Length: 251
Image (spheres, rainbow, N blue to C red):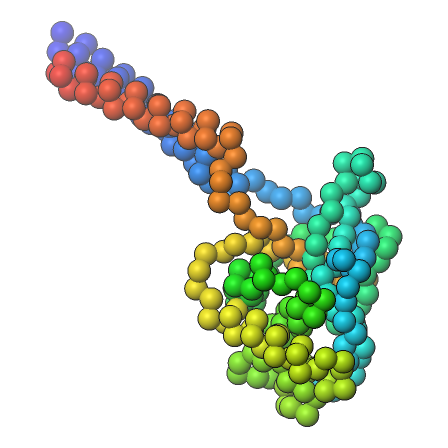
C-alpha cells in the first residue's frame, strides 16, 4: 500500500507540474506574446507626399558637401491599393543623399543600433506629440539627421556651416534661427529623456531609395485576446493551488 500511495503522489505531482507549465505558457502569451511574434522582414511601400503638403527647404552641409533638401513628415502607403487592404503611415528620412519613390519599393524592416535607437526613442517620446506646424516638422527632421549623422561632436546640436561638426544647417537656409533653435530644443529633450518608450521605431532600408524611420505610438491598453489569455492563465494557477492544498490535507 505504501508503494501505491507513493506512485499516486508522483502522478499527482506530475499533473500539477504539467498544469503549472500550461499556466506559465498562457501568462507569457498574454504579457509577452507581442515580443515573441516576428514581424514581417520586408514591406512594399510607396511615397504619397508630405503630411499636410507642408515642408521647409533647407541648405545642408555634411562632411563638407553642400546639398539642398526639403524637410518634413513623409506619408507612405503599403502595397494593396487604396481601399484594398493597404495601410498608410508616416515616417521621417534618415539619409541625406537618396530620394523617396512614388513607385512601390521593397524595404527591409529592421531596428536601430542600441545607442542611436535610444536617442531616437528619446526624441520621439519627449517631443513628437508637440510637433504640428511645417516649421516644427522640419526642425524635428533636422534633429533626426543630427542624431543619425553627427560623428565629430561630443554632444548633439544643430549649428551653421562654419562649425567643425560633420552635419550642419547652412546659415543661408530660410528660417535658419527658428529651425536651429527648435531642433536644438528637441535634441536637448531627447538626450535628457528618462521616461518610458512611447513609440515603436522601425528602420526601413532600401539600397536605392531613402531609408526611413517609421514610428508607431505604443498602446498601453492590452488587446482583448490578451485579457482572455491572462484570465485563463490565472485560472489554471488557481486550480493548481487548490489541488496542492487538497493533496496536502489528504497526506
